[in-house]
Amino acid sequence: MHAALTEPLAVAVHAVARSGMRTGDSVVVFGAGPIGTLTALVARHDGAGEVIIIEPSAERSAFAASLGFSVIPPDADALTEISKLTGDEGADLVFDTAAHPSVAAILPSATRVRGTIVLVGVYKKPVEVDLQAITFAEHTVIGVRVYTRADMERATQLVSDDVLDLGRFPVKVFSLEEAAAGFDTAASAGPALKVLISSERTQ
Image (cartoon, rainbow, N blue to C red; front, side, top):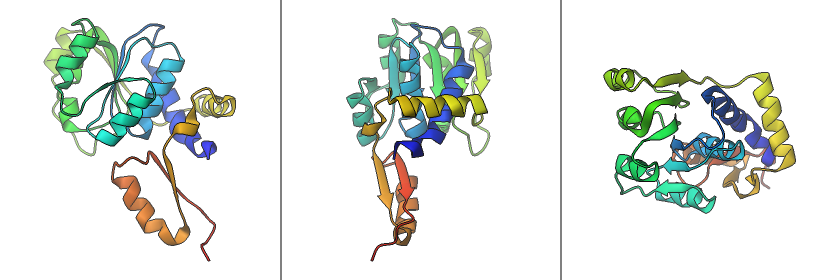
């Protein structure tokens, strides 16, 4: 079961590697889906200080909190809470795994002066971004696209070493006959962070 997480974990490994994160950096992750949660886990494993997660789903927020992350409640103002948790400075690194227009609009405000914004999620179409704010704050903006062979190898090693406690990851398995329901579940942004289709047919 853990092996099925290797590919999305490689994306997270690549995102953190691209970010240039340093030990003790404060991190914000927008989105607690599979990629967002794995990115937070990798960042913490690699030495991040405060790791803050913003997720509108109450179920996914609860799971992220159970992993020990600072989770901003869905009904709270994200920027206000980020400011409180980062000493009114904003985060050193902000990972956008949500790829939602509402997130793009506040990325600069969540990031400290000369901090880094990492775009991990893929937007379906162009969105408005405050480039003036990015310029004035001298932010670095980094795009992330899948992973390299080295990232996959490291992800495989992390799974093998079982250092991220992936056994707690909510995985739901569907049979071949239930494949349609499996795709619906995967698209629902519900509590299951990974959906698998088993090749074993039910009797």
